[in-house]
Length: 350
Image 1 (cartoon, rainbow, N blue to C red):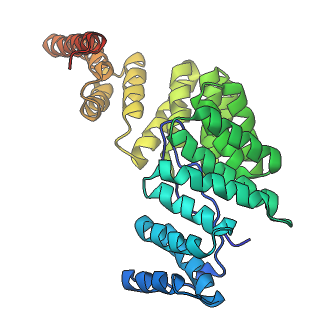
Image 2 (tube, rainbow, N blue to C red):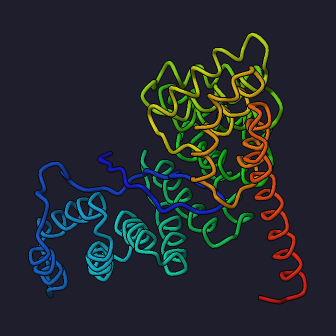
């Protein structure tokens, strides 16, 4: 099956790119990036009284290219035109749903995705289960964005039952269960996803994160180390491993500091890494080294009291009493501001 990958918009529930899935194009690699004028002309040909098969095949290929190029509005119009003459084609309706969703119209995309599921179910042949699972994953993502977690869960469970080896279904199921607070279920899904794609950094990262949240620090460390070894150029593995190691303390602190510094080499704007480094350096008797990291953390999150609190500790250790007092006042101001905001929300003010 010819396929393409397109990053679907993020939702609060999933919090990352979770569906990079398929729409069929005959030979997408052979279709050049079309100009807007060429797309408009193609749409007109598709809408002609009797478009030939070559036109329809090219339209699918161009739809593929438009989605890859994040030209979603044009993709919507092209797939809409295709759907007018091929309303029973599951590939066309799937593409229409995908384009509509990526264009920011989740509510409009949901019935299209459901229709793609229904049409895929009618396919006879080896593609039926795979295409149905693909459509179910897209439907679940849309439902999650629309805050219908129960429907999304049902769709993903159907997808993994149909095709247990469907990576996107397993990974998306893990993300949804993680968002719903079901760590054990999420771990099972993420483990399956990492078994299916051992080199996928996203699956490894979320497996490690879920282990960490569940309190299984040993397995979290194993997963973070795998991620660091697999993809040393991305910061997530170094950050996760470093935070866990400095939290553990003792002999693990030195390695943890190195991992956090490596994460900051890759991305200097990591708030969590800056704060974790600051805490660990203060605890290790290196308060002066901690100051720069904590000051940067305060710049990254000016309304978070934690870096200011840690700065007050560092300055106190360094005998810089006035600066310590100033940071303590900032902590007090932030907490008072948060309390006031909370009271106003509870009373319906502002």
